[in-house]
Image 1: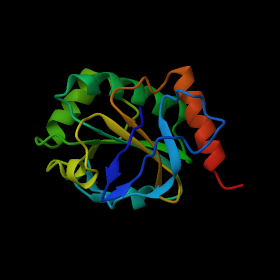
Image 2 (image 1 turned 60 degrees about the horizontal axis):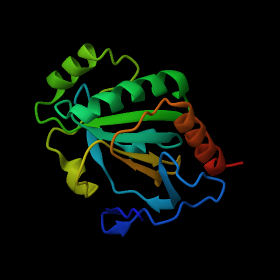
Image 3 (image 1 turned 45 degrees about the horizontal axis):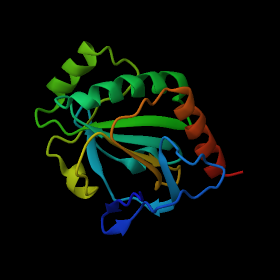
Image 4 (image 1 turned 120 degrees about the vertical axis):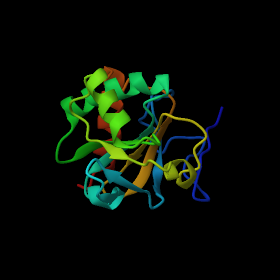
Length: 177
C-alpha cells in the first residue's frame, strides 16, 4: 500500500523510496528532498524557534504529546537514539503539542527518565495544522538544507539496530561529499 502525506499542499511522500539500496520494507519512509513547511515552536525557556535554528544538521523532528500512550515508547527510544547518535550533525527535536505547556512535558521527562532530548513546545498545536497531521507520533527526517527526506507515522523503535542502520544509510547517502 502506498503512503502519501501532504504537507502545506505539497505531497512529500510517494509510493516508492528514493534509493534502490534501501530495503523493501524500510522502518522509515524515505523520499527525494522536498520543501518543508515553516514550522514554529519554542524551547523550554519560551524562546521562538523554527527548523532554521538547526540548519546544517540532520533533524529528526517528532510531533508528540505526553498524554498519548503510544508516544511514551517513541520518546524513550528517541532519547536513547539521541544519547547514542546525537551530535553536531544529527539532532532529535521532539515538539510537544501539549496545551499545558512546559509543566506536563517536564513531568513526563522526569517520569520516563528522558535525559538526552531537549524540550520543545507547541502549546497551541499549530504543528498539527501546519503539517496536516491526523495522528501522532509523527516524525520527519529533515536534511541539513531543511528539506524533508523521510517520514514515520506511528510508533517506532528508534534505537533498534535496523533503524540505526537505516538512518545512517539515508543520512550518508544525502550528505554532501
